[in-house]
Image (cartoon, rainbow, N blue to C red):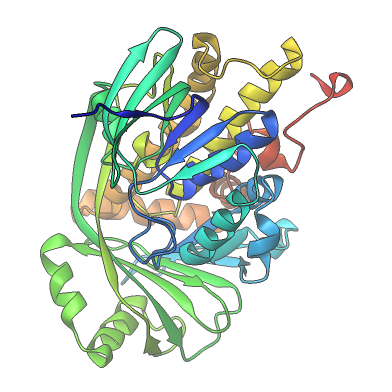
Length: 422
């Protein structure tokens, strides 16, 4: 019986061809790296991680990152600007309203469909030299080999071994790479499931987003193409199946009630799907010649719509760390050098930790029915609603500008010349 087939050596092996992994491949290719992207589900199918029905709310920083990766031109035509955000709690008058015009902004970001994003990123990957997409391919083993990592995969044609100077785990919250690298992860089950779909309200959304924070989970309406809205409804997991099985009329009536009627009755319903909600935080995000990105490094609750935005900032920072080293040494650097991975991890620590904790605390705060907690959050909502500096701070954070911001998120080029170097 023959052994595994040996694939050509590569510089960076990205495991996970979803939105974060594919974006990283686009970011690294201009730096001169040979990039291999492994994905266990073939693209351009409904089961592909890039082709589901999710609605992605992209902060302004994320839109700029995508523009720097050459992806935004393909998305701009179907992207919907978020011009106003209203956050409220049922049964309470206090609310927070963030208006981009009040902050002299055109918008806070844009809403795009994950399916459209997947199409754009795959189309771009097909045009990039030095990037190989291997699918279907499932990782089964991971070994250290000095200045290389050896990754064994299972494919329809048999076992294949890949050798790379850096392995990137971008394979989601249930990361196989993380498990094979023996990186422990703390998991918290919120006991909630997000039901997502597209709906069409009676009243045009006019670029407005609404989020209602309830004890059973947040409910959000996001402005979408035309008059549609993306709906994200978090419910206790034991209620999710019943919600999925409601007739169209029953579901729309229940969703209209939960929305508080902010856009009038909801009239049309798209396909519904559901995702269990958990927080997954690894003990560390790097190992020798290995780094975790996206949900593999930080799976969080969708309240505030920060998950994918956080993953895109991972991509931008890793690419910038490698680009700056290239400028210093005058050639494409070894991407798995321990010092570079340490620099990346240190840079991302504050943003990742703060975002993970903020989303978790928000869910915990609004998930409590204790009288003292209800009073505290009412006071907090009123204070934010009355104080412009607090609203600006929240909006700035939600747009992706916190702490040290990568160049791509500022609309600056990834590759600097010597005269541009700090």
